[in-house]
Length: 175
Image (cartoon, rainbow, N blue to C red):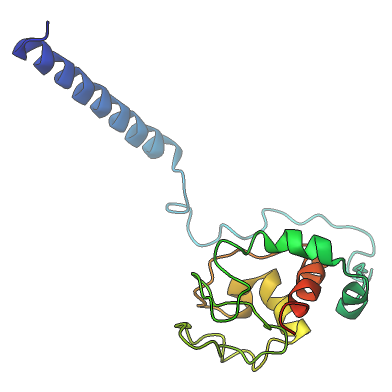
């Protein structure tokens, strides 16, 4: 059914279609200048300023939520266990059972980077001594922001209530 000439035509057609696709992408990028290159360094500068009456003197009030202590006092352990399901891929709760990340058995108030047999990146020791509630909250909110250069690739838990539920749940594990 297929002979050498037919197979050559099929391969040639695929190569030709790929070439047309790549040339079309190159032409579109050339015409529309996508990406940061070609715009200079002033791309973050505001185009124009809108003057508002009393704009400089008006104080912007940021509504703050409850404190970490209040959230921990009202924490739900069942919800904390559900939040921990996001951590299960890398962390284990059994003492000495390291996964991709160190085990979290008795992690609350434990010394930072103190699990034997786990190779830490060394960036955590520079920012904290122990995993206090406050340090855990800050780390869980934004691991890369808390300890720049850390090996933990998790983006963080954005909701303060989820972090408090998780910290309260972890405090019950081996504590």
